[in-house]
Length: 369
Ligand code: F6R
Image (cartoon, rainbow, N blue to C red):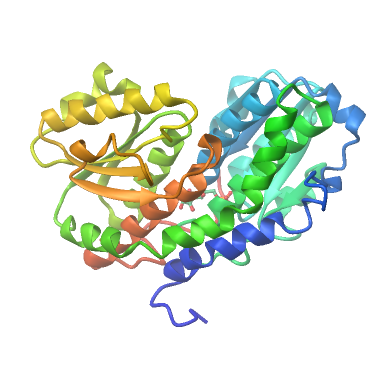
């Protein structure tokens, strides 16, 4: 049932183009507009929403962090994202105009369930983004948008994460569409780009051999750091989480702008640092900032592993290892930038002799608080 792969995780990484395409299927109509009756909220109700709050754990939380950038940019609705395990203990401000989005692959994560119960008690509507039909979280929510990743068996989440991102983009774009924000034109372009993105994920998968080779060469290391800005920051956190849980290595993700506020002290000779570089097109200021971050860490001896868009030449002089990803709109980049990090962690774990599908101390769904 591993379909010819040694591990479920490898199979699930390979299934990502299909998972992404399946999650979009039937949700974009022929005119290029979104159809999301599943949200079970009328256009009038959606126009009433004045705040979005996202709750989730682990990898699903990283999807939520990325969703915040998309929701605020495309809809101008303020969006908070919070770890489900922290949420209800701080007496969050919620009311009927708050839309709460609970993201969960399994639909059984106790922290996320408790957060959504708390939100509903305060009168907020809860939308679940979930991969498991009929599980507890969608059953207890007002509405559910299912991700169509298919069953995810490996403990480390891969294809579920990409489909959670797709679902979040769909919700964000739909809110924008229904509310008729000033980003109307951009929304149509993004819907088109999103509908073609599964092919780009496929292209990334075709070029992963050098990433595997690099991972094997780093199997003896103790620490790997990950840096990103904007949506590249949650991607960096996700890369670090994958490496922790699979390779049992010390791995940390940082917002690149925070470097000089502390983490740069960690940089030493030959320390591997993975940097997720935003597109040089569009918000180029982000790009230029990160190029100088790469220079700074390299000057202090870091071994730089740079994930950058095809055609981005500015990074070449500072990259000890360069991993190319296809050009995508900035907000969609996590769909392609995360894939090399999954492959990297999986290969490094294998090289260290770890059990990839069933890492020590971890369970696929965490049904205790
Ligand atoms: C990481 C991982 C976990 C889950 C988290 C939430 O690879 O799998 O961090 O993402 O436990 O699980 P769900 O999405 O089932 O609520």
